[in-house]
Length: 189
Ligand code: GRF
Image (cartoon, rainbow, N blue to C red; front, side, top):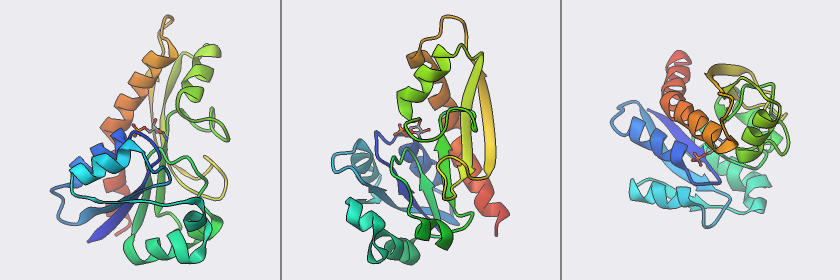
């Protein structure tokens, strides 16, 4: 059994989608959803599906007895589904090629500090890009720079607003993220 711990900071539509996808999987299991935001909707969503949900603060994130030891005990894989804090180096080096992130753009473009959520989609529209998409990648010490596992693009039409682009990208995330997580895990067995 491979156990996945999901870290998320926001509404958790990806987390919920992943939970549902693996519900009936006999060899891959979502064991916990953790959030650095006490009131994050993702925690309610996890509870609704009977997944352990836990809020943690910054000192838990960065201390060795905190998140690192929790993950060592509970996780084979860590999935970041809209997690807005940097993962400490010690966690990254303890879990090489086991931490998977999703980013709502075609990296290496539109990545890095400050590039999250609507900031990404606004920048993409302002720059008159004709396509955008999403990137699933392994996490390394540098934000949004780990090895790319999978990308999928979608066209941007001339009148698309950032909100429209956000909806298109989220649909791609929901369609592909669980499948790609499953593929990575099965290929590493
Ligand atoms: C997604 O766009 C994801 O790419 C980004 O954060 C967003 C999370 O959305 N990293 P949700 O909380 O899963 O609805």
